Length: 255
Image (cartoon, rainbow, N blue to C red; front, side, top):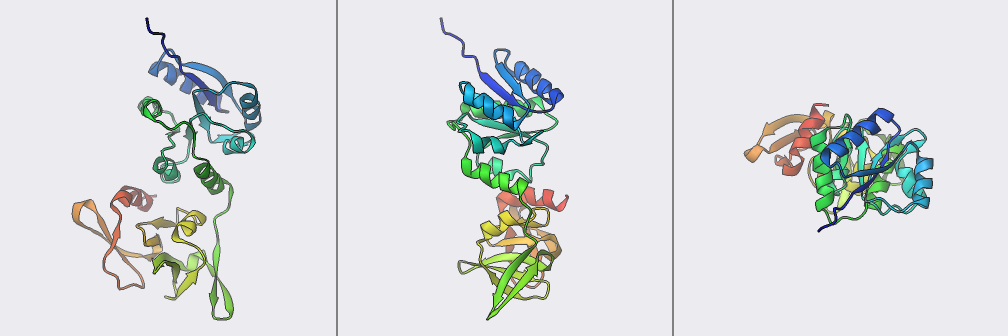
């Protein structure tokens, strides 16, 4: 006779009602799931991981009473897979989906929990990606850049973020276009610029362009549900929103 596998789960959540709801949803999913403990703080979580065997799965609220849960990763080596719980919207945490780290949005929903746990059970991923943890931690704790410093000959000039229409790549370099219709080279890749600026203001529409809403003159429906964008200060006619970014772009427009 086969022995049944009992899933051992740890919950890190400082809201007692949310922790209780999550426990109930887990038992609805599978009554054999064992919730080892509910931990309310970064400090207590670190202590728990130092003194106990690793759980098979961790549910971790991002914001805790004494800090953000990513601080736990700085203090202990956490090798268990993690499903994050957050009140942040899908746009802000798109990095999780791209990098196969799952999350649940508050208020918790059974179907979403089921999808996340099923994904964990079917995945070969044994732990979270530390690089992505660090990137998202920086997004939560650091202020976004207010300006970029550019060089014009022998002169150095700060360009405030409000003056930037869009960032774009050209011949393996990155430039900004300003409201004065000037183009300046910056010392960042497009990916680096994207991680440094407010995603409410700028959106990466494709591999070449990172645009502000203020720079958009027109949005045109294109073939296969794609979108064509007309921007200020450019004669380029084929600026297309990448197919995989169309839905997020529409959400960004509607924020």
